Image (tube, rainbow, N blue to C red):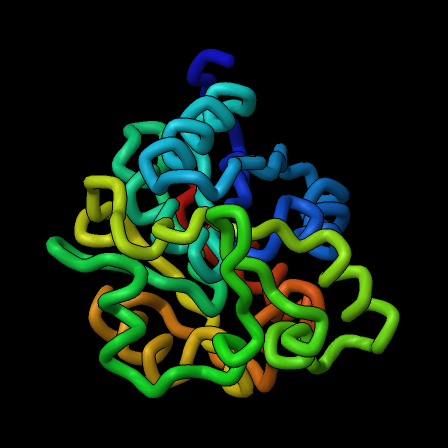
Length: 232
């Protein structure tokens, strides 16, 4: 779609590892009900560069300008893809956010290893989460919801975290960050460090790693505030 003048920015969601676009299933409907044009990018978790290309293709399917919302590894994706001229704001949910010379892995190495990595198994060139690990990922969801999250999880390439696509969008575009205080996947102290480094508008919630599933109204409020801030 071509760039058009609109009253509200479009919203493009970018998922993390062990996830896909369905992880935003609770926040998409209320935003659509408010008239936002919303789409979730579905990328293969094979390479950061390839995932960024998919996000840019997805941006072409909605009107511009747009806000990118990245969860977990999706924060690394929106940091690179957000340099696209169609993007006017970035929302990070318990997410990584590299700067020059950093990878997803090197960001995490500066902080204590979180519980989820005790339950990761390498097989067939991918990193799979064992069923016991879901409590570290989505422990504040119901047991049934946790089983569903595990059943729909998608494993990244084994070397995905050792590289990053070029581009640091948060250096030139406004950002918002949702810190998950009870996260056992991306360390909360790392989240706070990243939010402060990018001078993001920061909002904390007592949540597991998947705040958009356990506290969807809170997440929608932050996205709405970001959208209103860049509107005009």
